Image (cartoon, rainbow, N blue to C red):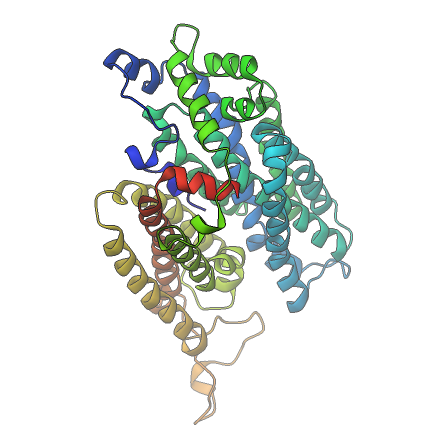
Length: 435
């Protein structure tokens, strides 16, 4: 979920390319964050990413609770638990596709606010669920909202941010999504599963309330011919004492130059299609590593293996490590070469994933509540794995392997997409996204 187009600075990443360099005074007025309102608008928007991260991993503590539910209508079988966890991605795919239309039809801000409707309804369905169908429908609706916000929020943030802080603000959607997941893992230690759904309503309502006072992006307003409204929005975001005429003219010029669609001849050029294919392939391969299932079924994974700490605590630790790794990735992305990060990350991911898989299949199993047979009484030549003792340090393997896998899995897509966008150049990327 990283947004690499927003995470680096330089001429290749300038959303509003310059015809001529402004004077030093103009650079100060355009690039410096003179007005704090832009940070408030960014915070209001990225609350949607917080909700997305929260909803994505909602099933991690909920599935173990529902598998032991006393209500037969809510007690999940293995198959039902699998559907409950995975149906979120179907909703997210539909939301992402819908964003292609809603982003230009309603605008960035209204599209984000629209996502609050399925999100709030989905959480309400899961909080008051009396049957499996309500859980599935609620999970699908929150997935739809998550897919919509994941596609709309980075565009809104990039279009309202001043050039001087665009890189920093561009990293906030990913950070808030990870922080939302960590919050879910932490609340899972304290709240029952129904109240976890109720708690998910809070960020959605706050996001809607704050965004109702925020302007739409000047770039979108200009693309719709609403020049006066766009100028007022830009002045509000930059502050009354900031001269926004130069930046406004640059946005106007940029909108006009990028209004043309990319031609088929341009799309067939290796300079254009090769980086795009590589970037999409890397994103696809990253998902095939199993990052999303691990996050969605994190606590059930720990429940099924012998671990030293309680599974809920292990999940919360992994969530904290994931947040820390995003910060590290943002700092090191420009310090080391992209290919170096890719090779190192892929190697560590391979080792961590292999270790976790071998431990799950060959390692010690957790003792069951009715297990009374000691290891010494097991039949000779038996094929059953021994039960792990609570103090065995071998049971730290799942936690350590998962932490390493989660940390390294966040680096390759962002590094490779940055590299590909350097090769393409920002104007070409914008034209392709509009095609």
